[in-house]
Length: 424
Image 1 (cartoon, rainbow, N blue to C red):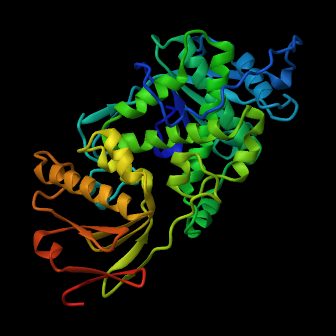
Image 2 (image 1 turned 180 degrees about the vertical axis):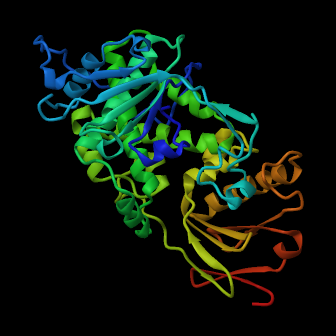
Image 3 (image 1 turned 120 degrees about the horizontal axis):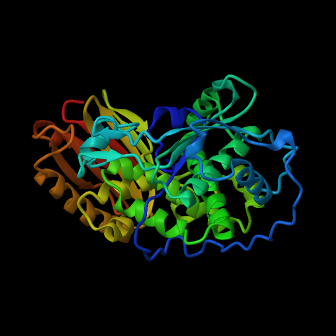
């Protein structure tokens, strides 16, 4: 499942890919700068060697495409020879069409995310699209090859299957060329407060989406992955599912805006975005760095790090039109979340006072919707919200029980923000 980073196995391994699902062609201002790529026609007519042939295992009758031909095409798009990358093994199984309940969609979202609308559930469940797939590198297989696991239903269009397979093959290339991180490396990346491991994942998946898009333009008729990708993201519910798809969609946009060919992907890998703002707006790491924000928490309050512009944007879509949510979040400059048990203060510093005023109005409307919700997901019915204008550029959203919300004190002095309670 191209957007299904909710499965723990997919997160652990090399990524997921799958059918995006159909949808109307939307207006896509975000990706307007993405370069349309013209790839030279293939000139290779030689039969593949035994070493470059893809072995298909399992329910192979469900795979209506030539797995080796797709593999060689992806390698050619990337400018690689079959002698450089070992051919993977493809294991085919019937599509699971797994349905995830609201609890199964929690993923990395925690209680704070539930409280601010990042895990609200308008559809009660999400059924994974088909076809779907994920990649298991050698250490998770029974050999020295990378395995592509494909779940295919009998009614899946062959073009969708081929596009999904191409996406997964990009992950094979990433694994074999060391564009992957171990758990220890991801943990080290997390220690760098400027770079989120999610940025690495978004670029990894965005690159696979980009190559699949170029592949479809060249080899598949009647397939418009850009339109399907955007429609699937905009229509995604609940918000935990939307947030997982957002990384794939914006990852694609970021990559497509920065390269003119799949052969240029290594340059993107070397300089991934460091913030969600850079990801969303296609910026390099040296553009729009986070504005300074120092949050001092007293007593038992503890700083938990940055939430990010994308999380802010997706949360606001729960009770605001998406266009307004995007506009309100766009002036994001930095943020810090502090907590004390299940009490939270989300401090957001915008780039200017105008942006702070727009976000303040949007947050007030959003929390009005949260207060009025009749079927909140994993959210206490008596939870209270308070929006505070800390200074010209800075806002704070306080979330807790009603008796606690009004006791939280937030002030600013010489650019720093101080969070405490009346008795601390």
